[in-house]
Amino acid sequence: MYDFAYHKPSTVADAVKLLADPDAKAVSGGHTLIPALKHRLNKPSALVDLSGIAEMKGIRRAGNAIVIGALTRHVEVADSAEVKAAIPALAYLAGHIGDVQVRNRGTIGGSVANNDPAADYPAAVLGLGATVHTSKRKIAADEFFLGMFTTALEQDEILTAVEFPIPEKAGYAKMKNPASRYVMAGVFVSKGPMGVRVAVNGAGPCVFRQAEMEKALAANWSADAVAGIRQSAEGLNSDIHGSAEYRAHLVTVMAKRAVAAAG
Amino acid sequence: MPQVTLTVNGQSHTAEVEGRTLLVELLREKLRLTGTHVGCDTSQCGACVVHVNGESVKSCTTLAVMCDGASVTTIEGLAKPDGTLHPMQEAFREYHALQCGFCTPGMVMSAIDLVQKNPQGLTEQQIREGLEGNLCRCTGYHNIVKAIAAAAEVMHGRRSEIARAAE
Image (cartoon, rainbow over all chains, first blue to last red; front, side, top):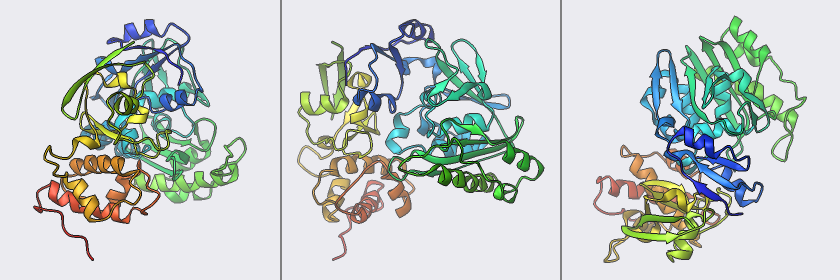
């Protein structure tokens, strides 16, 4: 690992100033960034550790939404009584990210801002029609995820929280790589204030909505409604773990399981 | 260079580190606590698991500077000063839950966190899922799972000592 300067600001404003340096990088749990730094895939001049910023922590209910601070670790979302009561599918998703030690350090803000195609949280953000809060503005999920490891966030813009509208029903199912536990193909479904939404992660270069399945579920909320819908393999990921055709097949299987889990 | 002060196995330490110094490097190279191992160095194998503020963490994926002010427990901090083993260590010995022993420090630290978080008890499936972050290439996990189940009984006061392994 190349060396870097280390800063630990205690306010969002101070962190934004430090991130004005285009070679500085934000870090919280570090469970994506530190492995990348070890491989020398990245050479930041400075790491700005956000974990001391109190205003970015915690889970609260705000009207008909659950607002989760960016620094909230996966284990905290998985164990939260508030999340379990309001959006059990989100607690389930958080409790199945990586392994125990990843969940003890990794944060929702880091996962969403990184937008790894095989990460879990982007599926919930898009699948629930969440709103991403940043140091500058609020961004709808549909406008947030732009491509592989790419989001609408600017260099000196910090993701501070994610606001999830509480759905009537929601479910998540994934096929995970047995070694890394990253998502091969996953589907998050929901029905509620944001309509019927189906978000697919792991399968493509970026999380995406499956419009045909959304239409079918809006007419008939049941696993049978999506059983006959085939995801096109075009543009999906193909690697040593699975071909694009295999991932396309998994999308239908995971969609059925997600709807069944949602009830 | 940044300075960190942390408590390791009950003792306070202050050390100068680089920003890039990993917690496991601080433990092994500066504090000479070599019981914590580095296996894969890619955050997958779990040989480097220690407790930071009571929770299991992969010390190869944590910067030392991030642990300023934290309380860290390593495998060396489990036994009592008179040498009496922690129930989890005793159970690993009794159930022959290791062969080469390389993964064992991380396994024991993960297992203790798992048992502490589940006072109501654990099923075999829950133990296996709780070990997802730890790899063992010798044992096939069977005896590790049995050892953890036996240690859980003692740690939560349902038994006074580790049950003997079946002959």
